[in-house]
Image (tube, rainbow, N blue to C red; front, side):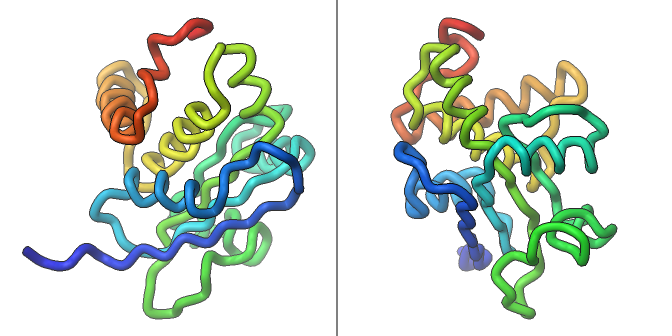
Length: 170
């Protein structure tokens, strides 16, 4: 059995508020979702203004969103992590960037309440969802969405969380 590739996870919190997951929790969720992928990941917790600005700039959509994922390819094209966006993850020159996951705390908190989920369960789901995008999962069509959602369910169950797609408000 070959050793698992090295995964470095930087956590940036641009706001201070009660109820945010710890860096340890965020790293656990990213590590689980990354699977056998190695590299550097930055998880950045932001407010609504920064989320809205990134959503507008990189997705041409208005307003904040719960999570944005920027795979390393986006960094190489000048996206977050490059010269114009977020600072590069970690800084280990021997470890390639995997990408950035940007989570909007107020949106995640609001969604958890609206959907009748515990904040921890929704945070885990959103961080796992964003990380899965970094390692190649997407939900552009029904078949891909099913594959991604099944993976999310399995990972969340491993942390003791319920199926996020069968909860009230979904």
